[in-house]
Image 1 (cartoon, rainbow, N blue to C red):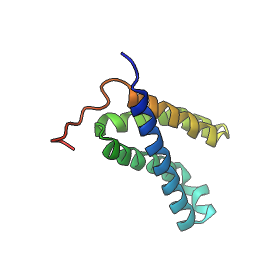
Image 2: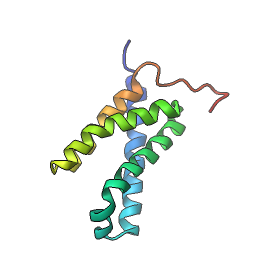
Image 3: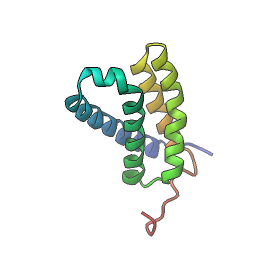
Amino acid sequence: MEIDRRLALRAGGVQLACVLVLGLATGLAFSHQTFEDWGWLIGPGAWLVSALVTARLVRLDYGRTLLGAVLAGIPSGIATLIGLHWLGALIALILFALWCGWPGSRVLSARTA
């Protein structure tokens, strides 16, 4: 069982782009104080929405992709709690990409997409 590097890179790239777009949009739409108060909800929400977009664009199984996003988000949450938010985000992105490239991730057929 070998990781599909091309698929992992595509999934990681799409996830990164989605997170950046949502981060920019929410950063423009909300005040800094909103992120201080609600960042614990906004960040993971954006991460999960991005995972759904990634699953759709890269043609991955939605449930498995969301599970990977949740699991990859755990170390990110820990890193955020100790003050290393951006390092945690990088680690989560790498773990998410590897998860998506793992055999069995791409199960959508042309009929189900």
